Image (cartoon, rainbow, N blue to C red; front, top):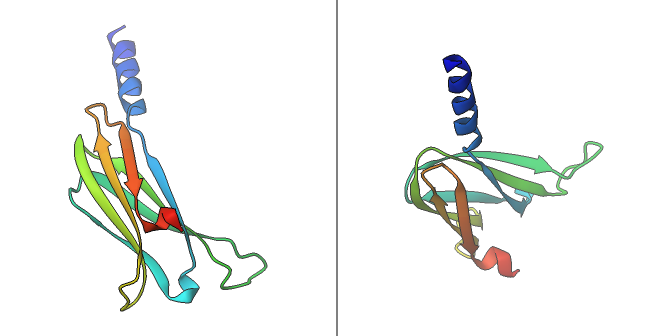
Length: 116
Protein backbone atom coordinates (compact mmCIF):
# COMPACT_ATOMS: atom_id res chain seq x y z
CA UNK A 1 0.00 0.00 0.00
CA UNK A 2 2.87 2.40 0.83
CA UNK A 3 4.43 1.78 -2.60
CA UNK A 4 1.12 2.51 -4.35
CA UNK A 5 0.68 5.74 -2.38
CA UNK A 6 4.23 6.82 -3.26
CA UNK A 7 3.65 6.12 -6.96
CA UNK A 8 0.41 8.15 -6.92
CA UNK A 9 2.16 11.09 -5.20
CA UNK A 10 5.01 11.02 -7.73
CA UNK A 11 2.55 10.96 -10.63
CA UNK A 12 0.57 13.88 -9.20
CA UNK A 13 3.70 15.96 -8.65
CA UNK A 14 5.02 15.25 -12.13
CA UNK A 15 1.73 16.44 -13.67
CA UNK A 16 2.12 19.86 -11.99
CA UNK A 17 5.13 20.72 -14.13
CA UNK A 18 3.72 22.58 -17.10
CA UNK A 19 5.34 23.95 -20.20
CA UNK A 20 4.27 26.74 -22.51
CA UNK A 21 5.10 27.37 -26.13
CA UNK A 22 5.78 30.79 -27.57
CA UNK A 23 5.49 30.88 -31.38
CA UNK A 24 6.78 33.66 -33.63
CA UNK A 25 6.54 33.98 -37.41
CA UNK A 26 10.07 34.04 -38.82
CA UNK A 27 12.12 33.60 -41.96
CA UNK A 28 15.84 33.11 -41.34
CA UNK A 29 16.52 33.08 -45.10
CA UNK A 30 15.99 36.88 -45.02
CA UNK A 31 18.82 37.40 -42.53
CA UNK A 32 16.45 38.14 -39.64
CA UNK A 33 16.68 35.96 -36.53
CA UNK A 34 15.02 35.75 -33.12
CA UNK A 35 17.21 36.19 -30.03
CA UNK A 36 16.34 36.56 -26.36
CA UNK A 37 17.67 37.62 -22.99
CA UNK A 38 16.28 36.49 -19.64
CA UNK A 39 16.52 38.30 -16.29
CA UNK A 40 16.34 35.23 -14.04
CA UNK A 41 17.24 31.71 -15.14
CA UNK A 42 14.23 29.87 -13.66
CA UNK A 43 13.04 28.25 -16.90
CA UNK A 44 14.67 26.00 -19.45
CA UNK A 45 14.16 27.28 -23.00
CA UNK A 46 14.20 25.01 -26.03
CA UNK A 47 14.24 26.70 -29.45
CA UNK A 48 13.01 25.06 -32.67
CA UNK A 49 12.46 26.40 -36.19
CA UNK A 50 9.55 24.88 -38.14
CA UNK A 51 9.63 25.64 -41.86
CA UNK A 52 6.51 26.17 -43.96
CA UNK A 53 8.45 25.06 -47.05
CA UNK A 54 7.36 22.02 -49.01
CA UNK A 55 8.92 20.13 -51.91
CA UNK A 56 12.47 21.33 -51.12
CA UNK A 57 11.55 25.01 -51.61
CA UNK A 58 13.54 27.57 -49.66
CA UNK A 59 12.78 31.05 -48.38
CA UNK A 60 9.09 30.53 -47.64
CA UNK A 61 9.33 31.23 -43.91
CA UNK A 62 7.96 29.43 -40.91
CA UNK A 63 7.83 29.68 -37.13
CA UNK A 64 10.37 29.87 -34.37
CA UNK A 65 8.97 28.03 -31.35
CA UNK A 66 10.29 28.46 -27.83
CA UNK A 67 9.22 25.83 -25.27
CA UNK A 68 9.54 27.02 -21.67
CA UNK A 69 9.82 24.46 -18.87
CA UNK A 70 9.91 25.69 -15.26
CA UNK A 71 12.86 24.84 -13.04
CA UNK A 72 11.85 26.64 -9.85
CA UNK A 73 9.27 29.14 -8.52
CA UNK A 74 9.78 32.84 -9.12
CA UNK A 75 9.52 35.51 -11.79
CA UNK A 76 11.55 36.38 -14.86
CA UNK A 77 11.30 38.58 -17.91
CA UNK A 78 12.24 37.28 -21.34
CA UNK A 79 12.94 39.92 -23.99
CA UNK A 80 12.72 38.56 -27.54
CA UNK A 81 14.00 40.54 -30.54
CA UNK A 82 13.63 39.80 -34.25
CA UNK A 83 16.50 41.63 -35.94
CA UNK A 84 18.68 41.74 -38.98
CA UNK A 85 22.35 41.52 -37.96
CA UNK A 86 23.71 44.98 -37.17
CA UNK A 87 20.36 46.80 -37.28
CA UNK A 88 18.49 48.42 -34.43
CA UNK A 89 14.93 48.47 -35.85
CA UNK A 90 13.88 45.17 -34.29
CA UNK A 91 10.49 43.71 -33.56
CA UNK A 92 10.19 43.12 -29.83
CA UNK A 93 8.20 40.76 -27.63
CA UNK A 94 8.51 41.01 -23.87
CA UNK A 95 7.17 38.15 -21.72
CA UNK A 96 6.77 38.46 -17.96
CA UNK A 97 6.77 34.92 -16.57
CA UNK A 98 5.58 33.83 -13.14
CA UNK A 99 6.12 30.29 -11.87
CA UNK A 100 4.09 29.17 -8.86
CA UNK A 101 5.27 26.85 -6.10
CA UNK A 102 3.57 23.99 -7.95
CA UNK A 103 5.61 24.97 -11.07
CA UNK A 104 2.65 26.27 -13.06
CA UNK A 105 3.56 28.99 -15.55
CA UNK A 106 1.56 32.14 -16.19
CA UNK A 107 2.61 34.91 -18.55
CA UNK A 108 1.76 38.35 -19.85
CA UNK A 109 3.28 39.84 -22.97
CA UNK A 110 3.66 43.08 -24.89
CA UNK A 111 5.79 44.49 -27.69
CA UNK A 112 5.89 45.70 -31.27
CA UNK A 113 5.61 42.12 -32.61
CA UNK A 114 2.00 41.97 -31.41
CA UNK A 115 1.10 45.33 -33.01
CA UNK A 116 2.21 44.53 -36.55
